[in-house]
Image (cartoon, rainbow, N blue to C red; front, side, top):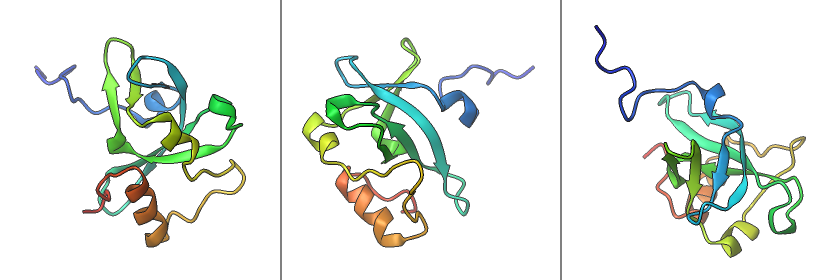
Length: 122
């Protein structure tokens, strides 16, 4: 019998993360996760791509946010992003038809530095 089924950090499918709500620490809606980006060499989740969907007048831009920036809330089945709204408002984003080159090491370093997270490959 598998005793690990349903344990706290059990693996989940990317498809079950996509579409999940993103909220701030006050549980106010910020947007939702549109895509999961995985580093093929390490197998780690590098980014969640989030649409803030009009939040603070930002339109439908997408934002690649280091996955370590999120905390999963079991009771709300959502992800908490504890980043000040002024930081989110000035965040580097892109539109759905013009994704950044995620193979560019400097772009990756800049995104991680912006969110004050260690790079996923370190």
